[in-house]
Length: 231
Image (cartoon, rainbow, N blue to C red; front, side):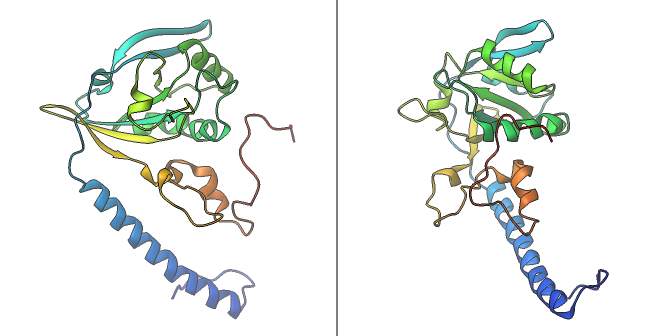
């Protein structure tokens, strides 16, 4: 039972809030338990090839690019690499709004994240398209890469058989015998209850977590957009 009280709250509110608090404590324990099991996974398969990406470097004058191997994405002695697959394929006129919402927030967090692990955001489009969109969004910190000329997206389930793009987050670990896969957000592919969101990348997506605190919740029909009318 919480000792916290707020102005004007009723006994009915406090009783319901204390019951909810017990559920929140249980959820916290479950979250910690799941994270521990994730960390304890055996090492996954060795990466089949040292994929060559095109690094995208945005400048006010345009986008520069240079080739970089997967093994070169490990920096400063850190042996963990997190790769988010950004849904922006060559057949898409515009990038995925939901992915864009995630990356808008992740751009600000990237300098913090990269103190602990390596980070890469990979899209199937050309470096020029990725760079132009990054400039439009004002992204400054995201390490962006094009997988236009390799099979990474297909191999790591970020691309369907029809070329459609999927928002999968993969984690890789560097060991003495090469780079191994460690984890993927497979919850995306798991069955879900009717009306239930996939939630496979919710931990890195603050938008929905914010809405979950509110009485209206996530809403049944609202989704992020690339542009909004001014207030």
